[in-house]
Length: 188
Image (cartoon, rainbow, N blue to C red; front, side, top):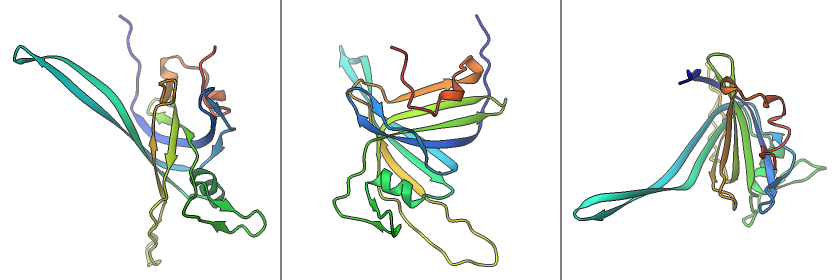
């Protein structure tokens, strides 16, 4: 039996997105930076059902439901909001237009998690949509209070049944240098 080498996560960085352009072929646009990451929270929901026979539980099945994702970042630039939320940013005036029928595209989100041993865990969430972020602004006081945005989204499985890819450097993964050049796809 081989020893498992592992270390606890201590930080998150390199938060990127890529627009899902064709789901059937799992085709994405080029990844782009969202903003420096503060926190990434992934909350999968699963449903579990149990079959009873002869007055006892005899079988159970769990299925993955939606996956709630919350991103907290240093900022949420208008250029990024326009893409992630389906708004229009005027190229000349740099004024964003919010319409009631704006439609957010499906996107993938990638990031890496630094571990205590200096190695990284790499992650791609493959298909999700973000909703309008809540806004709260406070007056500046004698002590600085940073007001960082949080973006919430719902992620689902793609038509091929996949919803996430993860790789650990401390388990032998060596593809970190190219992880963010495109959304991960296994070799055909």
